[in-house]
Amino acid sequence: MEILDEDADALRTQFNRDAGKVRLLFILDPACALCLRGLAELDRDLLASLPPSVAVYLVHVPMIGGRDSHIPAAAGLVHNMSVRHYWNPSGAFGRTMGASLLLRRNGKPMYAWDVWLLYGPDAVWSDQQPQPRLLMHQLAGLDPAPNAAPLDSRAFAEATRFLLAQAPANRER
Image 1 (tube, rainbow, N blue to C red):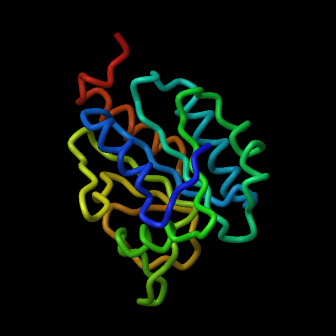
Image 2: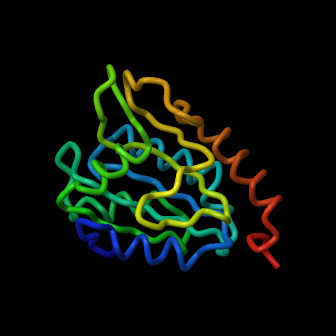
């Protein structure tokens, strides 16, 4: 597990280093039962069978009281050794991502957590986070957002596999 600073520099550097790959970014509170259920479903339907060439980043944020001590239990739900875990103790990453993803509830900015993002191999994280190809979430009352839908782990897995089929660099050799 790596600690993210306010600018998420470690994650941005790794994300850009993984350019050319399909990338998945999950943001959740490691103490949130609903988040953990979503993570377990995504592991069952996708993560456990992904080739190691797919980059997966899991950012843990303290939305409802999660602490770094909760991360090992959350990480235990993932059966993919190539997943990179990050801890953002200040929660700044959730605020920044919420703004970048244009997440709103009743027109007001919303914190990004319990969100599941799919990025294509061409995504680059420059001054601002790139927009995902797909955003799924488990957020109640979220205003409609571009490419956003409630989490369906099977649909997320299908979209990821479709994108993998289009990106030869990610195919297991």
